[in-house]
Amino acid sequence: MPRCDCPAAATGVVRASLLPDINLRPIIDLLFRRPQMYIVAAARGLEDEPLEAVLSLDGSEVDVSAALQPLPTATYLWTLDPVDGGMGGGTSGKVSWQPSQPSKVRMPGVAPGLYRLTVAVEGGESEGSQAWALLSSPAQYPADTKEFRQAVEITQSWGERVDTSGKRALLRATLRSLADRDAGK
Image (cartoon, rainbow, N blue to C red; front, side, top):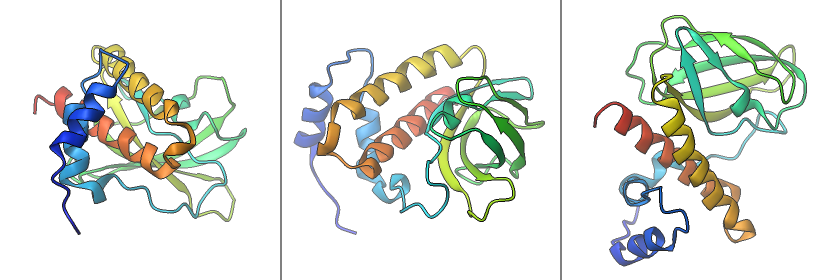
């Protein structure tokens, strides 16, 4: 894959941010170093897809509602697997989702970190759709949510100039950057 040596472009993107609280430099660096890591493949699962999100991990409970916002009311099967495959095996379960309602699920043994969340309609024929989710401790959750919300606002400001895959790649790199910071990397 061709490599882009574009420090001027990256600097321009960082300077172009109208949201002074978010530092885009580490996010852009992640995208330039390993772009294939953040690319979103064409979806073959649900018509509406879950969203990349920061989710609060309180003990063994996770409120998954931020990731499920665009999905219609239904019972969904979910799986959660570490993006890096490191932090042990994944976990799975079922959630009865109603938009605009909190949806807490039990995820025993899950630690804060970056995960791949896959959801599929229970009893449906879909193979499921994925989004990345950063599970944050109660202490880290407000800061992570604030920075991620700013990244979402940046991608929304792009309008139709950038496709959904490009926007999701930036959001995934943002989640990676937050996960690395939270882990002290």
